[in-house]
Image (cartoon, helix red, strand yellow):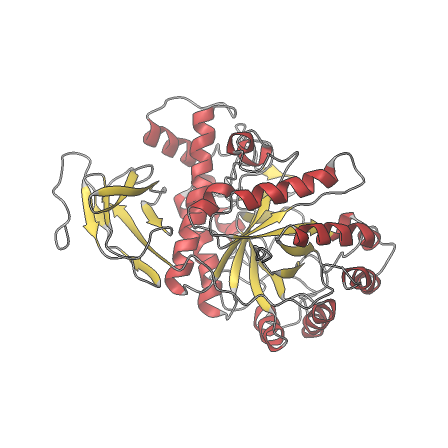
Length: 477
């Protein structure tokens, strides 16, 4: 019998940087054209730069003169897409904070309260010289606990207030270049948790490892909080695939890639630890340029080899390629058993991106090749499965000035079955434990509570005192 595919997802990204989500008419047109194309999922941008294309989240709405007044894109797109049998994943730019050219005008926006001019209250990631712009953008630093709280709540509020089928984490990393994370608060945390002195060089391996763990901790916390609210919600990430790929299963080679060493994204661990239900590779390659065609296939193969329980889809760059190349990339991706997602609805061909063709003309061109016999969308494909990661536990340590960086062990029958570390706010958790009794131990404290069959159980706060040892938490030793 043929091997079942890793994923039957067939999707399309819909971004918020041009027409598509700004009026009711545009949203209706997006859904109709997606249905005609034959995709089963829309990845709809919901959080752009600390603001939301919605009216009911913890974030202020986007401020854009082109947006229809009192319009909630996320409400309308979920209603229309669900009526056509499509899933909707809320796509969020997690660390996006500000664009210097088009800032959000709301006085309560994060860039106004915690942006470049907020002094000690700034949450932006910075270079060693204190600069914060990467191009025109400013990024939130995952290592600043208050910033992490803000980012987590923004994502969770979408799941709380909208019937989305899941969330997708984008810009869940540090900016390109490696030399980021030098806000004084981040450096103070690093020194306190590691016992080091001075200011680490960007290439310092211990510094890189520590920052990489801050990104992973942010993914972990989002995943746990989303699953605690709605276990059936899909937790996804749009992940980086810079440069030549590692061979299948070669994690040592992955650790030498820019993905791991530069932007500090460790997505194989996210899949292994159950933090992702779905990994969508941003496999943006041009087949006619050097070895990029083989790179696309190689990254697909590597991701499939280290996926754990996660589904994997290959995301390809419609805007960088002709329809013929897009068709080839999509066909190769689904033939390898992966799902497929195209970027993007607004720029579906290289000619549209270069303003030589309208969006409608581009969509028509890719529809012709993708739905041709043998094409990736030739046969209607449903994506109706449930996430594999639907149970776990989360908790927090409190009472200490240094709650982060503490080793947390999960035990069953007296044996350690998993380990993690607390984030800067003392949060910890696991999503890869089988249901049943589990004991957690951290900094001399312990608590036992069974992991449910479905859902994430929240352990009580564990009080940690560093001055003198304390007995185990009472109640359920």
